[in-house]
Length: 364
Image (spheres, one colour):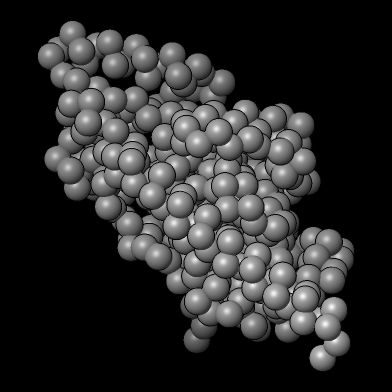
């Protein structure tokens, strides 16, 4: 091997060692924040070889955050580990949060509150206008109630932060100590869960001898992506991070992520700076609006169910999946060898959208 190749190999090995050192330093920093262990971590990192063969692009992998364990799993569990711990530190006895009708975040929050013995109040915003009984009572809404949370509805377009603040005032007057969690658990405290995930994924891939070129995920309330942006920056990772928007136009989505990533970096207290160029969101797959099905989502969800045995939700991970599949086909990842899709969970929402998949009935 020529000397230049030896030098390149040494440089690569040194970069890997440096990155793992930064992972350890990040773990030490994160350990200074209150955290309640709720998830089954680390979650698996698995190949999706049948899908990879079908699409003909890079080798595709899935980071199974649908396996976090809390009430059928999902990405919000990582955020709730820090948020519920912060609530306990502040002496709260009640959790308040909000989301859309089939909110995965609401379901996991209700479960987390039940696990620690807190009351939970969930405000659900009607963003779709649907009165289908399965949509408004089944899926995540059924599980919210099963976990013992009180569930109330608000009209689409309501100021949900103001609604939560008003409820918190009422509960305080009744002698309770409420703690308000924003929609999606997306603030600088909740985002720490995905700062930690960036570290976890990097160490996991190193143990497997896997070089990850890109990481793709659905992005909505911005906490997952902001945490990943911050975590990858902290360990000086060169993984290409791409969010697939499920709610807002690109400019708005990227600005929300960047603003929260900056606040999260400030919360870490290490002097970390966030590069705006590292915040990328493709919002071409939202369709008619948040929570409203698209043909690409339906095709993607059925494809993964039938090639990999994996279930994705119609609102969030399913639209992210649509974006991943389409971008592979369009050549976005050409030249890359390994692309990871972060599975943010949410399959419980499928039971609120059964009719949209046009599935056959019983056979004779």
